[in-house]
Length: 91
Image (cartoon, rainbow, N blue to C red; front, top):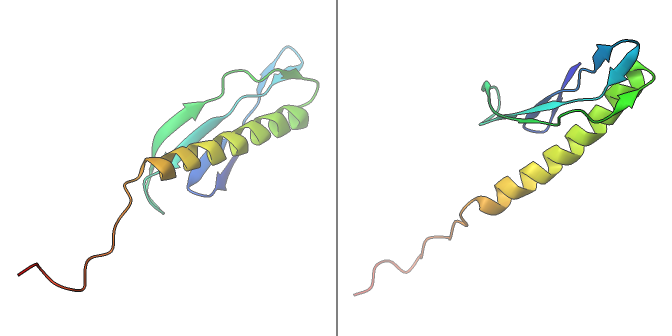
């Protein structure tokens, strides 16, 4: 079950094993809009759940929270651009 969240593509498809469902998610980050995903983060197993829907919801919550944290770290690591001086070069 894939969905878009901001600049991320999230796959929160649960794993079905022996009547139990395991929540897990992959987060793909796009370099820019419309571009193929370039980075990925994995949740690992987030626990076992009695239903597909419960496992999906757990994976979705993890993925959105992790995406927000990832986006904040990316934003913080970008260099700050300074406006150019309007006075021109020094004489």
